[in-house]
Length: 100
Image 1 (cartoon, rainbow, N blue to C red):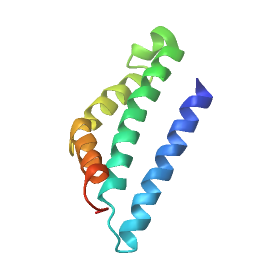
Image 2: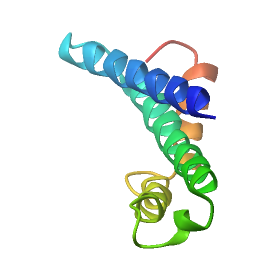
Image 3: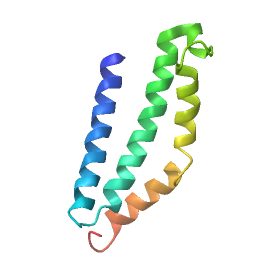
Image 4: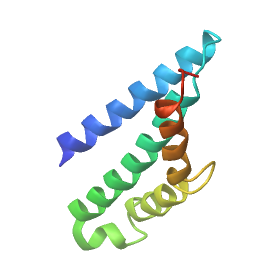
């Protein structure tokens, strides 16, 4: 589980950096930014859920930060454009007549 968690986090970092590089270069970056937000927030939820599972009953107590991180990860899937909206943005870019 830890290996999967670490791999997903690194993939998210790479997506964020890719979108940032495009923006810094003055190139279109909306699709990459939407992909990064979607992947990273879904990963945050998956990773925190796994962390709570690894910790067992302790994962649900306020003594460990995992329970707070899990709540925060869920909120991140909703704010600044829900993940369903991010999927629509990505789909529009993929199905559009040209790369935006």
